[in-house]
Image 1: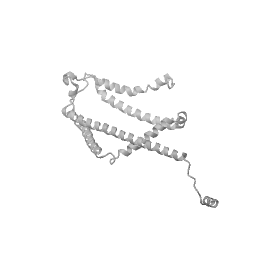
Image 2: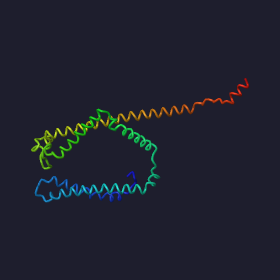
Image 3: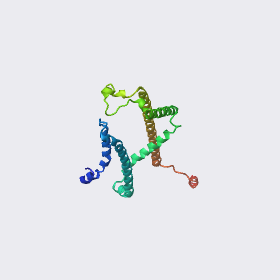
Image 4: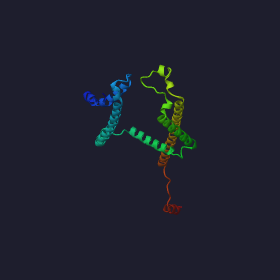
Length: 232
């Protein structure tokens, strides 16, 4: 490929992924079985739990060894791949944007209407999540992979949601929409503030350039005044 790595080593190095994929694939395949007397059904929960444990362990190991390799070869990485000037400028601009955004998201800085929106959205979000978690059977009809949409849901998949479920989902949707609106408004405000800061910076640099190019006025000392007076 573009990295110039040996194909055989890449294929051998990716073989351990079978350990992660097989338990999840097995548990998912067992869920499609319609025969309740099938002996494989009793292994599905165990395989699903095992796959989740393996995935979590694999993620931890990947982060650990990646950080270890980076710490050991940080100097070599920086020598072979120095930070590009455009990348540095992008990182600085991103850090400036984060700083401005942090200044705007304080409770006292967002404004009264957004504080009310935050409270309502949090109530809707927390309430909907708790109802779905503890009263899920009242929000959705029981439906499994073996069931039929035509027979059990009268031909419409939306019938799996009860009236209470639609109400809860509506609360969750309202909270998500508010988050989208607030995020866009915040990004717009940050963008305007960054443009204003950039304009002020350019103006200050321009004023400084004018001051450096201008010839400073000549100061007349007391000795020069006396010499001029004596000539007169």
